[in-house]
Amino acid sequence: MISTPRQITCVEIGGIPIALSTCDEGFLDLLRERYDGFLSSSPPEFELEFDLTSAGPASDDDVRVRREGHEWLIERGDFRARWDPRTGRGSVRQNANPYSLDSVLRILHSLILAQRGGFLLHAASAICEGRAYLFSGVSGAGKTTMTRLAPPDITLLTDEISYLRPNADGYSAFGTPFAGELGRAGENCAAPVSALFFLEKGQENRVDELSSAEAVRRLMRNILFFAEDQGLVEKLLATACDFVAKVPIRRLTFYPDARVWDDVRNLARNSAHNFADNLQEVPEHA
Amino acid sequence: MPENCIYIARSSAIAARALAGEMMVMNSADSTFFTLNEVATAIFQAADGHTPLQEIVRNHVCEQFDVDPEQAQEDAERFVTELSGHGILLVSNRPLAGEMP
Image (cartoon, rainbow over all chains, first blue to last red; front, side, top):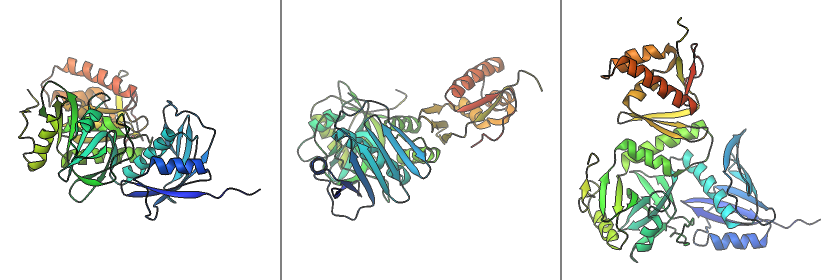
């Protein structure tokens, strides 16, 4: 019996190239099409081998991510993956559903990032005048609305899952192919983070201060993290506190029209210290 | 040793960090996240497994915060029950050992 040779494509998200290999030509095409714009010729840091089961829908089951010896075991109804952080290699058994594929990649990146002091955040992000702005919140808070309202010179990084890594001064946001309601991948580029806004829709545009504790609370609520692991949880909490110490975090109440981006643009033109001066700022106790 | 003594200890399966007077606590088993106010933080930090809750309330709550001792004890017991239900604190009527982070 002659086995079909594995074919490899390398996908680089957040500056981390991961080689994805499969024996299935159709699945390889799906990989290349889905991550077009994030394909890379860099030497891969990690490798994932895909073996396909019969096609089927993505599962709504809860994902479980736990350690088994040195390996991570990642399981949901539609996939089962193993990954060894010591060798950087892993295997995935899943159906050919692209949403299952996205889920596996997101979880793998969340594990890698947690070790490196970064994280995935349920947030839209975009670059305005060389600085990245993050817009987070529960479903319906306005993440996709903010990206739809963005003028043409704004670079969209994502409307759904923001990718954050520490840099020398603070944090950088990277574009991701993980799209939300907008149905469009972000640009494959990065910029230093200038601010994170927790969104709420309202009758006017307004920025409110948040206490550090409230900022950490909201941040933790929106970080994508699945691993049942004491060490990583400790590291993630430390990262969240560090992020809050280094990045201005505010509540942005906004009326959903294009003027909100004029205000964000004004913020970008101000320094980090007085970035909120152009908006009506209300102290927390009010 | 009085029979009604309650001993509390922090679970080893949590991550905790103090920030601006509040304690952030995350359960690593299910990623549930809690923030504790100043009084709750004082009790949490004193939960060493061998100091009775009554003594913790007397020394760390009543002495530092302007509260009625009976009310403080009642509130502390409710708080301890709630956090133990989430696996953040371990509760026993005997001293606890070996569970501290």
